[in-house]
Length: 228
Ligand SMILES: [Zn+2]
Image (cartoon, rainbow, N blue to C red; front, side, top):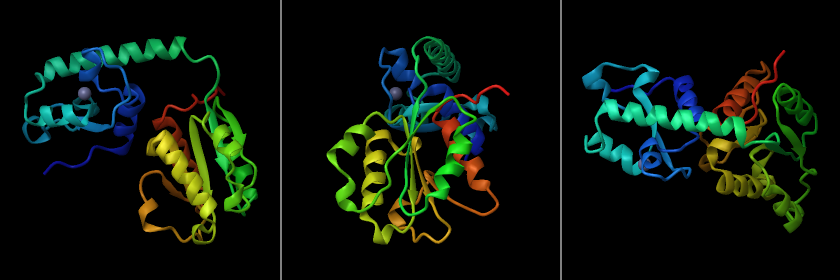
């Protein structure tokens, strides 16, 4: 039986690969792919559960790797190294402005200060959206503004009573993908079943939600932590 790799290893692969498939990349396709972090060699054969045996692959190449039609493990690792090197070079040259993190909130106003405190350690631009009031408040201007987000945090108060927050969450999920969206649910929020998933963080009194949020930001490579 193959266990899922540790979350931290998966996050690490997502950071390094930026969801680029190393095999697609080797053939000249550097676009972001929908895919997954997969084992290079099946754990059942290799017994290798370390991060060295993991890479991000598009759905097509995961299938080919499983069927051993893709390439030898050595070749896969070489392509992975090539991709990581290209991405780290790109990181040092392309981005000139910090990524924009949008914060959308409704009833609870204190939570935005707590989120801002978490973000203050990172090199990001915080954009706190005007308070959501009612569904009519999701204006075209607001959606236009939302288009420039690199990451979005949507605070869920009472989804059943506020279609606007679900609409906005859906907008960000569709636009950015679940790995760059965080739905932060208040302790007493009734969460509709269809929005559960890794992007959902429940706010707890102990403050563990802050670590979860930091992990999500790191996995999406949103802003490096500022030096002390
Ligand atoms: Zn691929």
